[in-house]
Length: 315
Image (cartoon, rainbow, N blue to C red):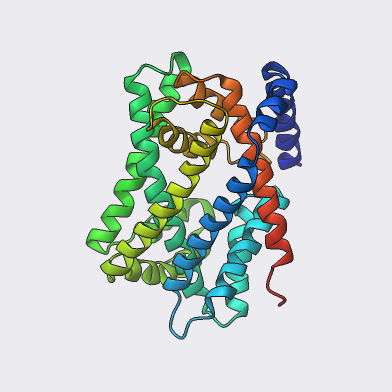
């Protein structure tokens, strides 16, 4: 019921944003972009393939085939997108599909968390750079400025935590779970800690015990994020906007975690469009360009999710 109410709120905000920006103007920009949507769809599919490759490289030997791993990654994208549940259902579904193929549950969880952490570490670096640049330009005012400063601080803490684990080999998840003892009760909290600790051992083995693999994963995730920035470049160029060459990278980095702040809204309806309009407008472009970018990304995500649904592993 709560998620349904949040979805309704998001759709209302979505409608307000479209009305304020002008549906006709958004459609006109989308038509002017030509084949950009096709390119964006291909780039996003390649982005997911790269993330699937990172998972495959992290699996225990003998690994399941790469094609099967990529199919699982696409299937998880379909679950995340088409059910409006985000990672709350997609990540367990991804783990279940790996377990069905013979990967031990703790190892499957460790691999999935490792891929997410390396992706988020690269994304956090991009977001920190972008948001700090925007703050220095005075792009945000009032309450928005304070919220962005808080987000920058949170990103810095997250990045520091991951780097701490990779350098020292000391995990943070199990100790954090122990703090839940007053809430869950000693027995239940101990069971949670035990399950997390086993997964975290595999995670730390990849973060701390195998530095070449960590560097390889970060390089791949960097390439995958560059593909997303290339989407922004293509759309801007197709619509005749030729600002500073670093602007598309700032847009991509800026919207990543502003969007994530609204992960509780199913599909991030309204929030994603507002965040894109805020970031793009802060760089001096028309805010409607940001809304158009967000909508085109929605369409390409649904197209890729449909492919993921059709290509889902048969068992």
